[in-house]
Length: 381
Image 1 (cartoon, helix red, strand yellow):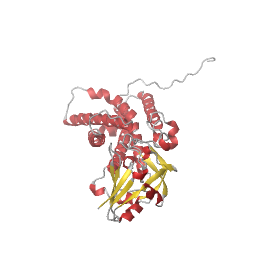
Image 2 (cartoon, rainbow, N blue to C red):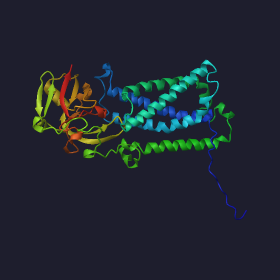
Image 3 (cartoon, helix red, strand yellow):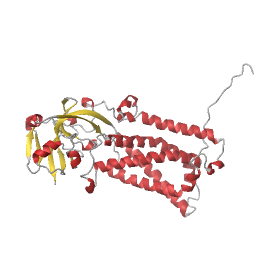
Image 4 (cartoon, rainbow, N blue to C red):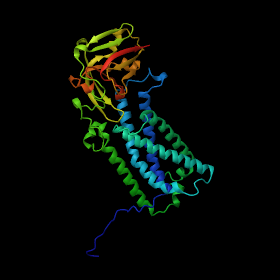
């Protein structure tokens, strides 16, 4: 045997794994990613569009809550993309079986698969395009994305119900149903699952740095660098895009409407007690970054106007174009000592793209509701 070398070859994936065991294993990961994405998306929707009975009760703490949930929402959605592709590869031969309907149960299975596949592809594709702020469709993204998410979850529940016996048979290595599968497929299956896991890890690590800033050095594919933008903070809508030119200091007035209405010039706002807080801007597209904000506490402005302790507040921007010109805050956000009408960012006067002369910054609040170029506060009964 002298001179002979022992050669150990890695397992070769030969493409035979279109079987229930492989589909079930990948489906477990995909189902978890989809449920996390749905749950965090539900949190985001409620924070942006709370139902009337909840509008005045949204919590302002933890201050990083929305940053965490929305970052997890985008990360789980991106991770679901390679999982969905792998799942479709594992089951695609069964999508074209003939006859298409063999029984009522088979019909329900095919219906659940059709809605689940179409809905999941739609959600992931539109969500990915939303991250880069490209909207090549005629409908409003938020309500349609939200509605289709419920269809996907409903289809997933139906699919799990009709496929429960098969899923149970192939859930674990010790399941009786796995005995019928070819033993020689084991190495190939492990290679496939390792490849899928590597793909999920790769897309996660190269994008999550836009919200988990310690990992920002790994960003390759995320559309936002958390350090890129005026004053070291990204912006989604510039002053020019919002139709706000450079505000003339002498002409600016902050109007506070309530039981004892008043107006303040910019110099009067600057003369009020100033407070500094560290809070993140957490955008619905998934990027976020903490910054130091200095300004007047909103609760001080509300006390001066005579607002009731449980009053909601409407915040009106000077912007002329674009959505979210007006936002509302429940009393927990309005009265939180971290909620400011900010005049400075990281020690410097606000850049126009960050809302000069004054913008809202509040804890645990979506970035689209951190209204910039604030011109009016209204106390709502």
